[in-house]
Image 1: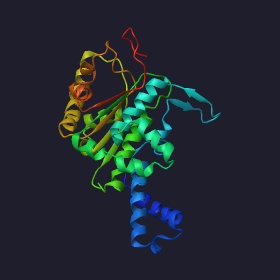
Image 2 (image 1 turned 45 degrees about the vertical axis):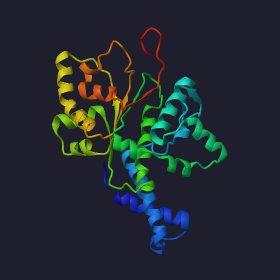
Image 3 (image 1 turned 90 degrees about the vertical axis):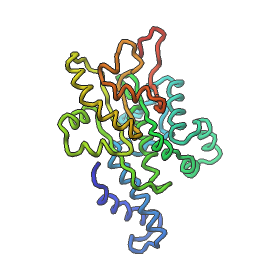
Image 4 (image 1 turned 30 degrees about the vertical axis):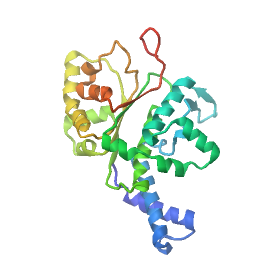
Length: 279
């Protein structure tokens, strides 16, 4: 994770101007504290979460994709699957249903205070509750988007509960494998961070020998995070329910145990077919 201090200083000045129409050195102690907390939150959001995903909230996810050029909307997930995914995110992050949050928004358009008070990410961190997000599709279906919403709520603890010692990271699975295999300097950050997203886990054909090498390489990493109760958000670009696919043989016992751990929230973004072959 990159150093946030330079960006944080810029944001403090921006917030001082936006909220109080003052320069930083003219702020009161209370005003400076508020601007500093907000700046720290957004600095972490933009340094950890991939570009273009940091501004999303649960209200942005509906299973649709918007073409940035012509603004056309495409339904990439059937409504029932999208609604179920949204509800699971709500229960993980705020301990309540999407229905309750939607009703609160109808009563009070500004739900920021409601969601801030409902945030249970500290409980998820202490329990070590992992999340797996998965679905096979050539179209955007919101896998990375949902992971960004969860990570954002974890970072929000810095403002709501002042848990300023927590750390966060985000990495593609292929890059994580290289970091583990080569034992790079940054590997310790991925091992020890409180919250980690492992994105873009792909199903690729490999030989038995290659599968053994991959699983032997990544097993200690994921098992250590599981035993230390460090929440890991795994984002699969395929459907892990495919009965023809042996998760443990391909990705190792560490990832398999996270998937089957009773604390893990599972969020499918595709429909299960009647034939046992998944869309």
